[in-house]
Image (spheres, rainbow, N blue to C red):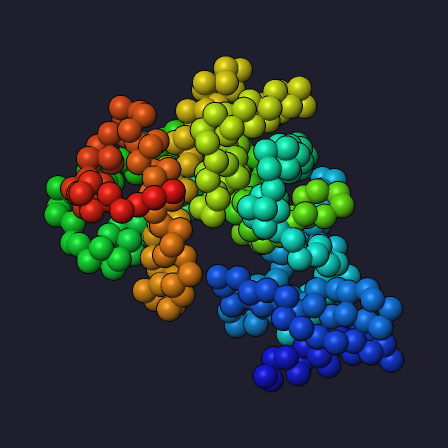
Length: 334
């Protein structure tokens, strides 16, 4: 309650004499919370509450400026109090891509994903080295190690043998070799249906404070191998080809052959799925948030499908079979 009182007092100082009502807007998997201030004229703004002992607002402010200058629709930062951990932002509304896609049809999906890849290309074209932290070997590996630490050890309650652990490290090295060989651009890092808003213009882009400079296919894997909504592979390939054609025309350093882009996208997805399985397990076992458990089977299905397709990833598929025999997976439906 004390945080909310501080927030309300700060907001009054920004707009003295203007009455407003304050209501929760959303929360995310971190310590950040969001409130919507609605004014008497019907206008509204969003306040990010990021307790400074847990969160640093500076990356958000920096990346918001980079993405806004790139020509994409992100929350505009009207005011900031970094000491208290408050940001005053433009309101991108209530409707996520996920909500619109779940209630929509094929033409809605085509429209929304087309806009999402247009915005992604703008972000990628604006990329400059040394503006964002590098998505380097250390970070890629740290993320993948969440899988054995939280998914295998805590969620499955399995202790890997030395042989299994060595095999997993060898697989990680193969994945990282592919990831680091890809052209590098700005990477949002969570570019998916819950962080894209239906706005004018589409999409409104949220939750970019962890953006890095890294592999060009990462945000495509976030977007089309989405943990919260599943599409048929034929649809995804069509959307990816459209992205690839637009990206080549724009002069981005994408592969000259679509099959090479698709392979890199698949391998990048494997890195992300290992991380996400670890994070979702950690959110449950450490943070008591069980809402992500229902999303584990879809993420695992993406991981298995990619591993089955590439011979260099077969050892990972074999390990997954050892950890969770297929008889246990018969109940997974997507």
